[in-house]
Length: 143
Length: 143
DNA sequence: TAAATTTGGGACAAATTAGTCTTAATTTAA
DNA sequence: TTAAATTAAGACTAATTTGTCCCAAATTTA
Ligand code: SF4
Ligand code: SF4
Image 1 (tube, helix red, strand yellow):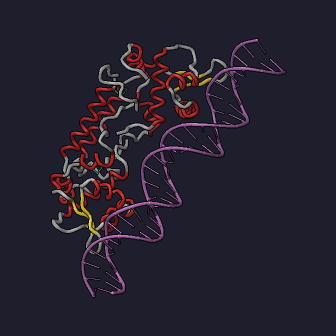
Image 2: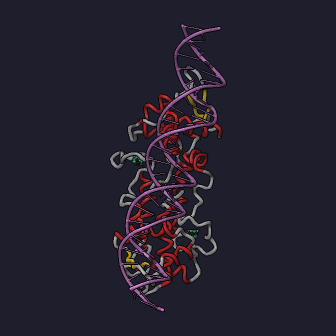
């Protein structure tokens, strides 16, 4: 089961990497990120532009340019990235792809599916980049 | 968030429909199913062939032909269909698409993601076609 | 047997997602 | 001021998923 698109996964990993470097006022170049994480440079650049336009990060061209988080990593949650890249209705879809027949007379899987989505959403809402960066820096996770 | 492919969703809905008709020894034609559920006839035919090859259903050509469930609907669980169409490793994927770094030193999202997948799997394992067919026949769900 | 009905199977087309490449714009620094 | 580094933007290609079409094979019925 794949929950997220590649674009989203790449951005998540990339931003975890950036957060784990904990550079305060330095831009991190996209080339470095794509090299380190083995992600297509151009693809990453393009999806970063979306995050950029939504104000999640800031970019700078030229030597020593790159990207930087616009907020402290403790204030950026997974759900922010997911919302931007997958859409705000990400957690609001029927398991069978039907156009919202439910709620009033929910089918047997409706409530359980709602719970599954709810759990995922809650977790995304409470997991910050800092949280994950710490896991990376203590060797509990590798990107 | 889409958990299942269209092919899987179509088959699930189609088999729920078949189960809800509760025909004991009659084939249900694919044309009827695709008409009733507004699913592409050829696409449905093709994916049914896969279920067919895996012994979940039986088909019959010619007038009054169609498909029929090979087991009682109470003995067919959602997970059977998912396993055939999405692969047996469906519930065994990393949230970040990484090749199984986890378990020994799980990252902060590993255990929660494992739970999400576990819940889904459990539900699929315990929900039968009969269960859903009943919901359809009591008007609690429409396909 | 002939005609009609229905699935089987493969080629093909369209849509979506993923990835590549080229050029332009911006910024730094020699 | 020129060269180098770096992101911006958009065209293009590749892969995957989804959907269409055609004809063959099997079956029933007239
Ligand atoms: S009731 Fe069932 S079919 Fe309807 S929207 Fe909810 S999950 Fe989907
Ligand atoms: S530990 Fe995290 S990154 Fe590694 S397989 Fe588990 S969920 Fe994926």
